[in-house]
Length: 259
Image (tube, rainbow, N blue to C red):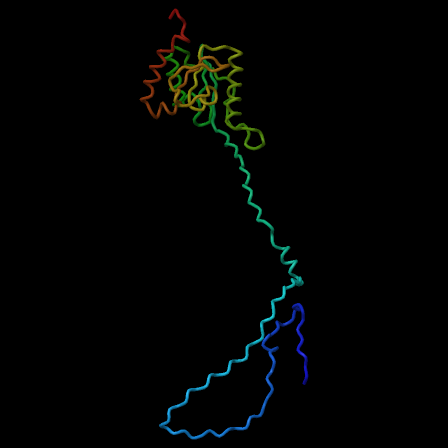
């Protein structure tokens, strides 16, 4: 049909790739009459076959053309949607949790030349027939002091408020107990401050239970003597011997020299 084969200089976008084998020249069709083959004798040796004619060499493959990148719709949008870099997770801020407020009840008393800051294990004021109060009276008599101590003010109960934003942590409790005791000492000085019970030792003397039976100085409060709580002395009677031993060593502080 005399159709001229045509190839573009560059690869067209969205076009099917070219097939070079379709561009090979087509050999013309020639009608060849059949030739009668002579009958060969079966005994005659077969003649060597003539070498086959070389096959037609295909045309050289055209040089590859450089591909032109054509942007496709939607490709730019998909590329831009990908994150450039994953942002590193920042560590969560450390939340500082305030320590819970301590809970205790203390009663301040005066006996002779001594001031006593005593732990109230039940949180209630002393009653005349309480076993712990009777033990305290025995200790005062053994120390040569009045067994009818004077109660100074209401018990110190901590925390002061059940609710609110007021700071009621350990430091605030220590400042309050220390200030309350210091006011009483300024009104009437004392030769020695008895700290009976762990809450009294911690919040007035700034010491711990390792200070039991020891005498030490507290800034603003003078000389202090640390003792276990009355409930502890009743539950562990063996501690009374240690109290008596330390008391005999310190008794000269509050007893008159002429006795």
